[in-house]
Image 1 (cartoon, rainbow, N blue to C red):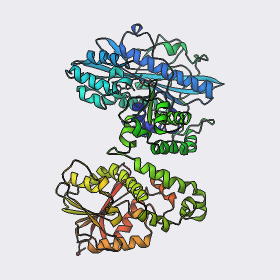
Image 2: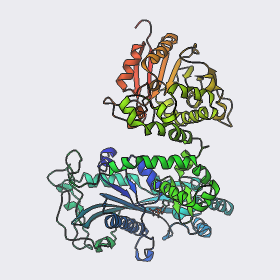
Image 3: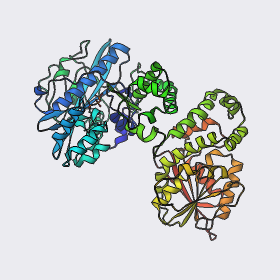
Image 4: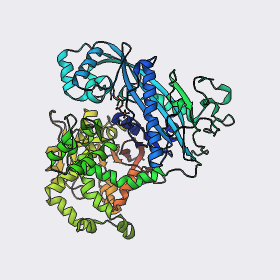
Length: 632
Ligand SMILES: Cc1cn([C@H]2C[C@H](O)[C@@H](COP(=O)(O)OP(=O)(O)OP(=O)(O)O)O2)c(=O)[nH]c1=O
């Protein structure tokens, strides 16, 4: 199954995730899906005994969650989404359905039932394609479920209570989170792990493939949905003449009433998946996947328009250390957070809600708490903290980008407008101000740390005995390299002001790693000897004359067979992707981002050969090249 074409079908659609679950948001974000989050107001109160099997309950709840959002968006905002996705995860043990515990005692009751036994986790998913026609909401519902079996070890009372007091069980079906502390309780998992975490991604993609690449008329499996009057099944919806085309429109009998609850929507279908037609089909798309509907809501543009608000909300929450504050704490009310950090209650509440809607915080009736990714990336002391880079973005990049218009008109940096100082003076600040220096180093450290593993493993570097990371700053990449290649000795070479401040960033609780720090200026001083030189996020910052000095020096000290590893975001040949690098160029530094062929050309000019480029999929890609041997 080719995933990207399938998810690509959703690219130009206005997709809404009708779920407050940060896990679902993360799973879908991680595969590059763009969507809005509109948590459903549907109360999970369907009568469980009226369902023949637990999964039917999950599917129906998922469907009702999605229907509620589709209907609300249509009625209230007159902004009908194209696709609404709803999901519901339940745990089933001994034919009983367990949802989220209401309190600690309830969590204890649930975990005790799961103790030492195998249980099933079912996630029901509903995908609703919507369209507004003559102000009527027309919908087409597809639903399915996935089952995963999970077995708990025999757990002591003490451990159960310790786990309950961690606060983790409260917003999770069955009272545990397999992805975090709860993972310690689990002996085995049979089936899709992500299904347990709240979203069966694999089945979802298969379902999309079925929907968007329907089989031809000849090999369609005929399913009947006899219990649903006046609705067609999807088999009627595929274009029998053209296998690759999407759905064609059909006249339908069933329309929704203003509550959005068509009679068909209340009928729960059995089986692992089903598709119910309640209105129309998915809008026609042409061969390029572009919708032909003239009145499509330009959600991508709206998202871009709003991007600055989202960035600033993240920056301010980070500056106010909200994620630090909520770390390891149970849910907190806005008023308590505001009192603790000395901010207004109404302003704090709005910021917290914004963070929740962006998937950074979780909001429950008990209050706000960090999502797993906020704990990992947004707290200031986490191993993978991006806090430093966020603060740098707020304090340094934001003012520069505020002056982008002048930057474009004048074609240069806007430090004088943004900070009242020229670039050179700022550089002096960097030397003299401890705060500016630390902030910059923390920013560099964040990115280096998060990308280090991918850069270190992009190529097999085990042939090298010594490496020198030029401008290696805090040594984040160097430490990763010595972990991956235990026989490699790495020297970090950076300015004396940098080396003087590295202690804060060194890994704690480890034996002194074979990383050495040497101070110097790579433009002026002699470079330490090494088999492998590394330039990570250096070349894009400097103008051609400086690069000439640097690469000439490296080339001169490299022995034949020695190598140079460059870590940068490599642009595609059109130089329009990835946008993270293209947007970075707007800072108007004197340097520039380069494509793969431009790096190759540049490196070959300085006597390097066999240039290999590895696109890592992470922020930094890797380029490896070797010093030409004399005989070449
Ligand atoms: C079993 C298990 C569940 N869960 C979560 C997934 C779901 O978010 C949650 C079950 O509750 P749900 O009602 O399915 O979802 P939700 O309340 O989080 O969000 P919404 O109703 O707005 O869609 O439990 C885990 O995160 N890890 C686990 O191991």
